[in-house]
Amino acid sequence: MNRFGRRDFLKLITTIPAGMVLSKMLPHLGTSNPALPNIIVVVLDALTARNMSLYGYPRRTTPHIERFASRADVYHAHHSAGTFTSSGVASLLTGTYPWSHRVINLKGLIARDRYKRNIFNLLHPLYGSVAFTQNYFADYLLSQMGADIEHHLPISSWSEFELYAADVAHKDRSMKFRAYDDFLYAMDTPTPASLLFGTINKHKKIVFSQKKKEDRLQYYAYELFYNLDSVFSGLASQITDLESPAFCYFHLYPPHGPYLPEGEFLDLFQDGWQPIEKPIHPLPYVESYESLNRKRTQYDQYLAMTDAAFGRFLDGMDRAGLLKNSYLLLTSDHGESFERGYFEHAGPMVYEPSVHVPLLISAPGQTTRRDFYSVTNSVDLLPTLLKISDLETPDWSEGLVLPGFGGEVDNTRLTFSMDAKNASAFGYLTPITIAMYEGNYKLIYYQGYGGENARYHKGLFELYNLKDDPEEMQDLIDDEADISKRLKERLLAAYNAASAPLNQIKGS
Image 1 (cartoon, helix red, strand yellow):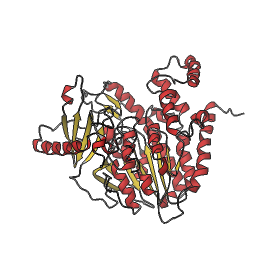
Image 2 (cartoon, helix red, strand yellow):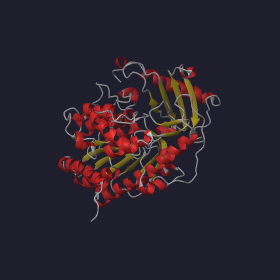
Image 3 (tube, rainbow, N blue to C red):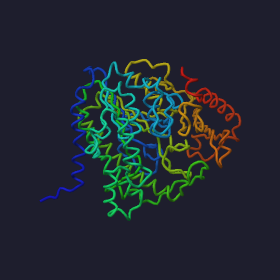
Image 4 (cartoon, rainbow, N blue to C red):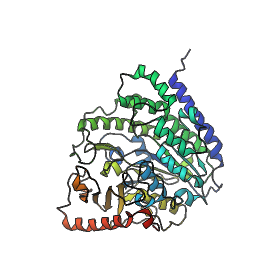
């Protein structure tokens, strides 16, 4: 008799809530107007373009995304407006920069007078909508936009956590998720803090006492949070029930840490390759070059595993014929860093690994690839989605329609990425790090940092030419005096106009 193991049980139960929820909700979406295409946005969390073979990375991490690229528009200089989920997702969904929507803190929400400025609200007259995310920070924002989302699927839809807390505090999703994040599963401690999981952990300690802290964290993340295959296969099988036209926002956690490659992916990239060693930056905590490379390899393995799951998702949509009448967008909310002594994201760094993210868009029935190299930003998605829906872009949007969808290539245009998580969302935005892009040039501005880094307090600039120096190794701030002066003036003008306390820029 075949043994039905615990792993098989977990895979089975993780599919139940999702299937039940989606089968009830999705058939009722939309206005039954097949003339309008569906719009499906897939966000893979913490996916940096710099580690994708699609964009020239030496390891073959994304063969299935490359397969998708063969029939899509590929944007090569696309950046997230923020360095972490809350900030990046808010910009993607509102078409405004963090200094406008004011989601600058890790668990921040959109300013009260602006949260109705979102893509769900703008598409509502024409589209039914469904939203799902595995990231609690993103779900706070979706909950804030809840009145504009027809069906906001529970974050626990593909999770064993559903068995424990599906109906707890069901009238206050934000409270439940914040409680889970703050007390049930604290990422900065080795064990959950609740009575229930604390008791479970006491039992587990016998088995896991010899494991490292990060190993225990990985165990809890996998067993209690999600199953990668269940999510992708669930979406692929259930999305066929959509009634057109529908707008879907699907935000999946991988390849965000903890990195959990399995099976064949554990043996990938044992190649001895090492990236260029970059100088340690004074601001973030310091992690060794060797440690960063080990974590980079784990990330690359997990990225390849995520890519394979996305490939199966894509195949499922192809079999259902869904892409014949749907736009499919693939992007990320922010990047991931393995350089300059800095690991992960949400720090003061705005170098390319932290903010350069993928963007691929496949139009209904598209069969060929187009490549675009001009600078674009996550704030551009909102006006582009409105454009393909024949809707006007509101004047408060800070994005532009993407090239390929009617937008013009303008190398004098400014775009921004920023981190101000330690600033007040209601006061002056300081301390802050800003990256400003104009054509091939990238200017970085640090302001308000104290402690031992006094030179970063009054304002410090760095300048790079990304065409000639994609690794950002040659600071041109003194060598290109005229360009530096002009770009500094443009950046400071934008920053000074947007950094005032919220009540002073209410009309923005």
